[in-house]
Image 1 (cartoon, one colour):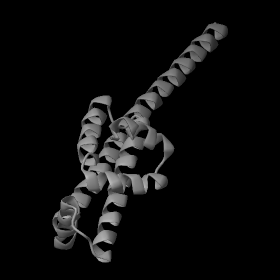
Image 2: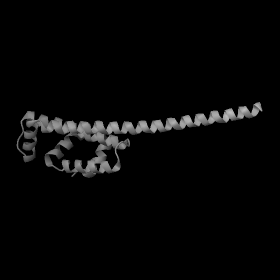
Image 3: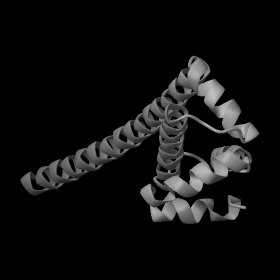
Image 4: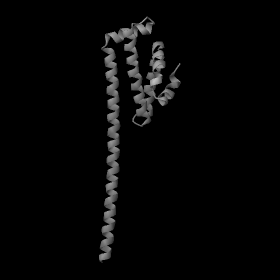
Amino acid sequence: MNNNLTKWMTILTNLAVIGGIGFLILETQQNNTLLRLEARHAASASMRELVLSNMNSDELILARSKAAKGEPLTESESTRIQLFFFTLFRSWQSEYFNYMAGVISEEEMVSLSLTWRRTIQTLYIQSEWQRHMIDLDPGFIEFMEPYEQ
């Protein structure tokens, strides 16, 4: 009789351990989902901040307008544009890294990369892209190659 009680206790203990492991797996999955959502929110907030800084900078808007028309830029205007696009391309690269880590879905990445492609097609932005490529990750550069002209 004592042997049967020991067997049942062992079985119940093993079931409790298995249940605990299942609970930990569920918690880990929920934490991963939450971390992905937080990463997406942070990336979106960063991009929103970059766009707002562009919209709120009359100097940058004027410099980009002059660059788009092919007009000569002052050193200050040229520097503003370089810094803006350095930040923009780094932001894109960060989105690419999130995609590679599984944080961004295939569908979302297709949408993002189409926007990037349209952006890079502008002549002065293409030259900024070429200027900043040396500072970017080779995997990201390779990912973007189909979008280069």
